[in-house]
Length: 334
Image (cartoon, rainbow, N blue to C red):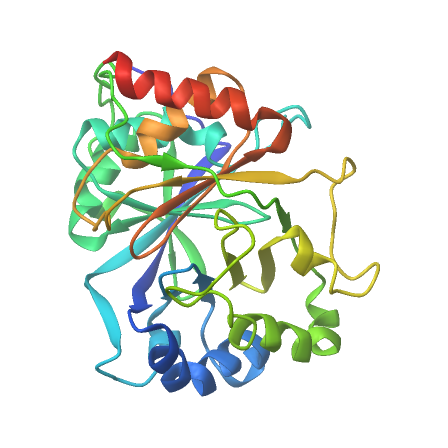
């Protein structure tokens, strides 16, 4: 049995997962609500908002208050379940050399959930990682993780223990089973930045961000010509509990004024590994584990963002060839 760790906790908050299936009409219908959620936080009670644009669609994750700001529309597909967002919080003793993103929780959280057939939806941000699970899976999630973590829940802004959830402590984790990679992998040619900005500076770049979010997609339509067909459109904006996270390609970053975006000391750029040839759906278990476990074994940091149709891992640019090689080897070796 793994010892309980009082300095770690899985924080659970309620979130509703939503996506616009039709790129143009869907986003037009939602624009008013999305602007309010992204730029007028004082006018809404929403505390969890994320918008990710891919070549296929927009994926929106909002809590119940944010969901009220979005209209009902035939152009919006809503996931058929309410999801809960888990966040692993580590206390003192953290080192700057620790892996970044999903890598640091691959073996302690992602793999055990996969071993117990619990489907997850990942959202890595500049600040932390959120693991979204279906509300109906919560008892099994708690049972699975209780031997490694002190489990807390956020209720009306207050953090409370989860003793009333029927969690059984002392659970023995099973051995990790081999997980072959079964979905196609691809790596777009563009490089990406994972960054943030001070919420106080948000008004000064609001017009630019609106342009990036809603008006910069002219060359992304199906059949549109491109000098580089492997260069894809990917942009993610999250505003969660007052913290902003941005993922955008290098060219988009250059549109921002100097000293507005936070950058790492190394100015690190990231390459993307895109997972899936056909839409992945929400029921298959272990997709995140298939990717994150080999990266954790190799001590390669990674951010991971799930969307309505495909998954996306971001790794340091200097590691991309070894990452692709390792993942493809794993996909054929099993």
